[in-house]
Length: 153
Image 1: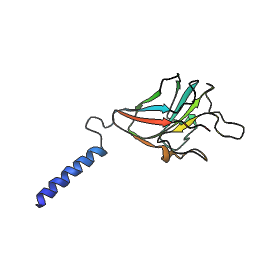
Image 2: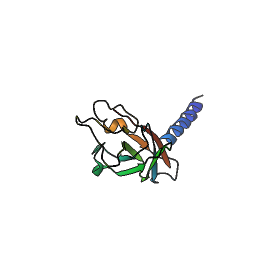
Image 3: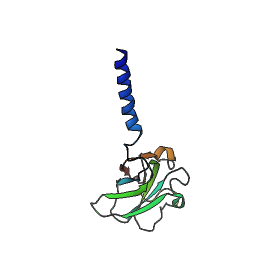
Image 4: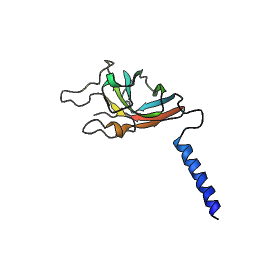
């Protein structure tokens, strides 16, 4: 009976190990993060995304972002963005709907966002932006897919 438990335990460890480590041949292979943006309140402008691999600069300092992308919006079409050639690891994405196309995240006269915004893992951002840890996602395998729901004030 003891040997059966040892075999069962070994199988469980192999299964858990398979979840913790990518399959052979994927270790060190570049991966990509595909992001679908939903919740646009109008089809004008573009959606700009910033990818961070640390809390430094997150969420709005584009100069410290690992990659930045801006994708034109179109009525009825989903906004899809892909960050490519990533090392497997932890990343966070910030996004904003640049409705007027000025490449800036606009705010009103009291500092409230005047354009839609969102973050990976969709944390609430009522009194300020989330921390990096609240938006971090694990990127591994050939592709990781996430959705960001934009919020408007």
